[in-house]
Image (cartoon, rainbow, N blue to C red):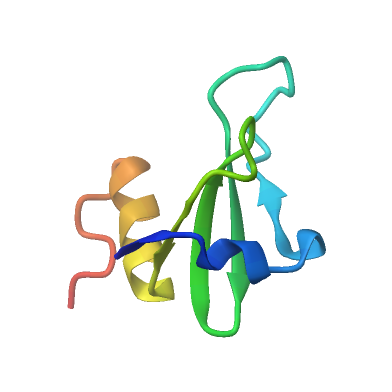
Length: 74
């Protein structure tokens, strides 16, 4: 996992928000997959540093957050 400014080189068209986001100013993140890296940023502060993780790590995190504690386990 890396935190830094590398997400700034990701095209704006690559970023998307969760379908669970209401757009009413809640805590939302945006995610982009670009050149083999998954980036995560704060949707309210797009110029702040982005988090970058491997696609595998992101998939495991999403599985964990969704309650599937065995996501990604082999």
